[in-house]
Length: 99
Image (tube, rainbow, N blue to C red; front, side, top):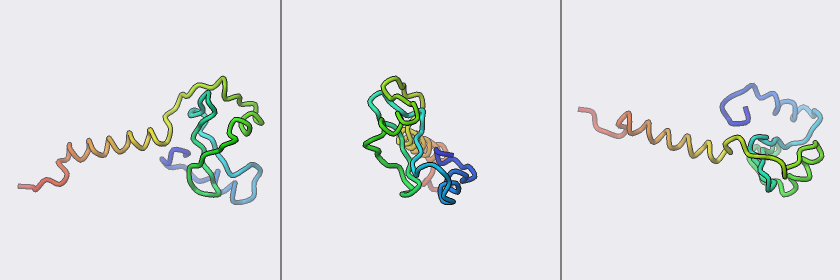
């Protein structure tokens, strides 16, 4: 899955096998009116900034000016997870000496 929660790696295998398409994947729910979105590069195995995202999406009929962000970005998800880990540490009294 794009969010790092698992999956079968099919998209990566398709890219590596020389399948059609490019090395970038866009998390569609993160596209904003100002042409920003979460973009993952299979080449770099990391999130990247695409300075031509609006042009690239327009090629597929996706006009960013009419888009509304509906999903959490990867950064927002990571912050949320870090907060939950902190909550878990408090709940389990992590680091406390057992009596």
